[in-house]
Length: 440
Figure 1 (spheres, rainbow, N blue to C red):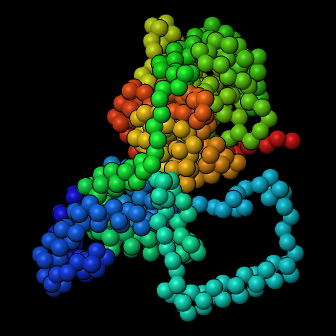
Figure 2: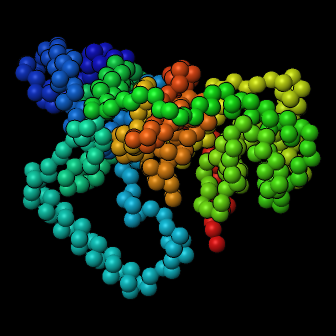
Figure 3: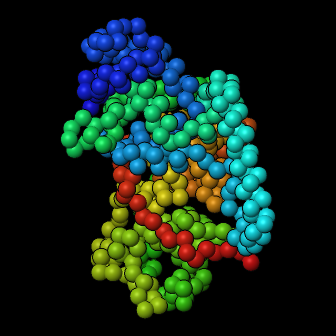
């Protein structure tokens, strides 16, 4: 349903709070006047853009987790979880190697630290109550279209997830369900989803500079489906033994890499986990190809050997090439677990890179939306896990400009795949992180 429909079902209390948010002048006791006044205000472009401009970075992350969903309803528990995930850890809170072996503090030290923490919390609470109007909030979107800090003194971080949800209800962006089946669920108006995407895109594009075609660029369209066939063809003709932990020996991996259309090197000793079953042993692109064949029941690991299934053998004998959309969907299902909000990130890359653009501009705009994943920073996630993998999938071209550095542009094929493919939030492949490949 759209906003107008939801306003008709809303009770007069929520209508009054929405009207107050938008400074509507009307009879607060007339539901019809409240609805008309709200629609008049909200449908004004300048009013809606002002509301989007006032959003904090946590608000934008929260909205990004909702507006790209095709579902109509969300439970309170789901919204609370998504609002909680919109707060990212500070750099000093991320996992470090020494934290895994750190010894617990002495009980006396723990008690002293607990008392100091409680005292500091009480002082902060008293200060907040004494000066409730001194919190100064500013827009998360900078004048150059990039996303900056959410506020000046951490006000957004003090909001609980339920307070964030309540504020969205006051804006008319979330409504309780109206039927017996949805009365305990929440709905987001469909037309508001579209308006949010359009308005935020306009903000992101502010002062973006598009460039001419670079002299050199990489374009790997359709190569990945050829290499899936090459992988299956190699396994069909070779007797591949696996190690005790179920991985291929390096000589087999190197032989497969030599047959690929795109060159890759064997991974160095580093922290590699979370992006595929064999990600710690295989380079990024080959890891995706391996997982595609495994999860599409073309490869199987049995009795210490890597074998083709009947489906895999038939694919080789028929010389069949896979559908690129299915490869994209598999990448999505694998990577959305370590990269929450991947659907939104790919959407923004598609819309912002319709022509050649610096990756530095994408970094300024999108990195604040990307949650760190263990030792992967938002910058490395954007470049290695998103842009580079989109290039391998043939969705994106990556080039080098003499004066601007690395530049990117979506392909027509890529825009078609991104626009025409939807993967539900719950449709994912979870890789257990129980055997981390930590360096010595």
